[in-house]
Length: 241
Length: 241
Image (cartoon, rainbow over all chains, first blue to last red; front, side, top):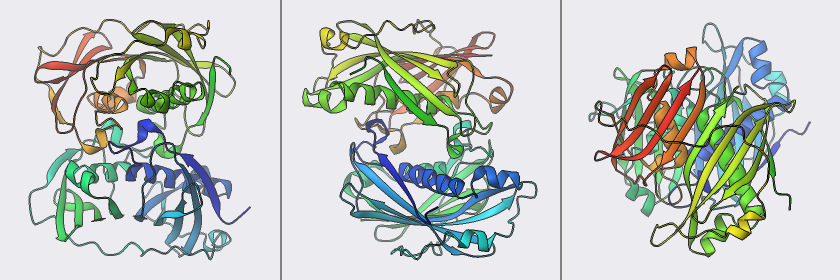
């Protein structure tokens, strides 16, 4: 089995945003599809993990986009295993357009949790290491995100049925969707998100009352947080250009 | 070109709900994918319509499900053109599981609008008629939905970036998502949606303040509406079992 996985997508009109462009949550879905398929095909997918009473949990994701595909554009997505540690493993992604030109990269950090205790378990460093690729991912790793939740009142949000994933927690793609919705539509008309970075800190559950925060820390740079009872369950950083 | 279109999907873990089942909005995405591809392959897709300064608009949809696929289940989706009128055309769908057993059907009614005036245009009855199939769709057509919006105060909702489609209007799948979110999680634990029916009456726009209503009209039957300034922009009917 090849170390790298290659996946093909074609953008679909009814999934594009009002500008006719692929959205960041949709790119997130493509990444998860590739991650999930790549892992399953190599024996460490959802089902393999469940058999060992464990599950993959996305801990951090950084995504950089230099262009956003439009209507009916083919996307080729490469994914490979990066650094493998005892608790966290890295998975990288490269997005290419129809002529093989890269237009985006992503780095993601995953942990495996025990399904009963919800605590991290030790990874099979050797097993995952087999699929480690030397391919370069030329974007910065997910880094530290400033705290913003004490500066101003947040936008309230309650976790609903459509927000839940198969584990009954706030779906990782839905965090992105709700965070991006905090920006006014004018931002999307005038600019593009160049870098989107997110750190998942705790699990959101059904009916949980959350507060969403966003602060411009530098020109075109926003630090964001989703909090429950004043404690962040997720932080994000968005750079517009 | 065959009259009927056949499409294949495999459910993906990160797109399932907390019960590990495919959601109605996700089925809606599959239907739209099939509709859009079937039409494009036969010369009356999104791009063909845009060239004539028109666009397809989904007017009504009725979906009946006897079962909901779980993890990694293959779905085969058939779609074909039903009745063709001067203003509305029908498109039907049949969902089959891995062994070819039908587990769901849908009937949808579409109009073509002029992109400038946003008014319906006359359909190419003969052109669409070529692809009409005699295949049966054994569920009731979308019917009349009772008015519910005067009975009780609605749940407020404001249209956000993630709700918008490529035309800048509230995405037809997002209506479904927001309506289903009105039901308490207990409903999803104890029952399944057997029939979901929706009528799109007006376009939702960015920032529009909406009110969502839901009333149990008969045991396990709900009439719903999404209103703007007291006027319904959408009605829906949901039958649980």
